[in-house]
Length: 54
Image (cartoon, rainbow, N blue to C red):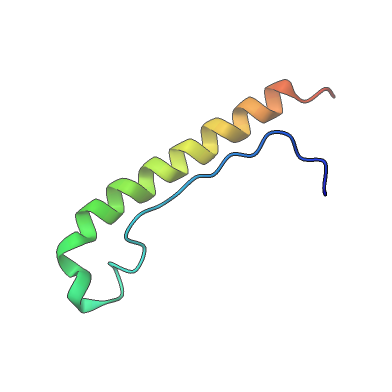
């Protein structure tokens, strides 16, 4: 019990596509997913910063 009441999961898909040759065909999907995950992290951090009292 940590007392967490608001948990957000952010996922990036196909994370091994850049290092495993048999997944090379999915590299574009990985890049799209990775960029979306980074954007989601940035948006979440911005929201949390705005909601946190100084």
